[in-house]
Image (cartoon, rainbow, N blue to C red; front, side):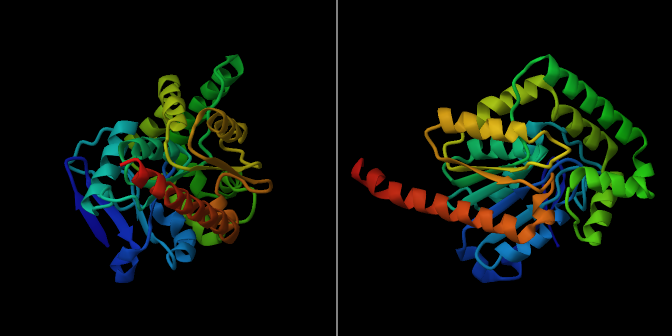
Length: 302
């Protein structure tokens, strides 16, 4: 159990190199969580990846074991980027190009800002279920509906502790069965997260200005990007992630790849852990080879 104290919070994190010191010689994967969930849902994926990668997970302010009592964190994209950045610097991960950043859902917005801030350390980015959308009346209506759903969920979230609403909550997120342990973890995290933080995160995730900034910034990530989408996602429309892939493929000079899972929903890391881990490892290896190929060019230009 490790904590990093800053002016924002006492940040809980787990680093596989703490139990396996040989991990300090491996490429690093930092996982950035989605809305109202602690880092526990990454565990099955970490168990697979940790043989080859140093895996770091953490609980954002307002979730899990991170302590915010007596602190006054700002619940904004910038604030969440600052706390993750403090962890990156504390662990010395900004010093060399060895960092893969994986962001899920709302965490994709934070991950994008980290990728820009630590571009010299970045090997690759993975954006899971965090797409970009054309601004039109239909999109605005969808965001307004989602905002209402967030408000309702926050006011009455304890009803999801009981069946049948508990199962309905999980089925909206996952199109395939996930281990019952993670049913309980996701519900527990959602119902016990800090209300102010959860509400703020839900709102900035659909704020038009925040979404415009995300769209601009995610296109400019200068390292290889993997866009992951479950076509059966009932939480975030999968078309947005496909649009992100297409925009980057057209506009970015850095490689962009798409991993499309036809029968998965919003939680591919739990719905098909081995398959999802395989796609991540292929992307990480691709990014590492991408920079190795560029190294002679960079040397020649000096």
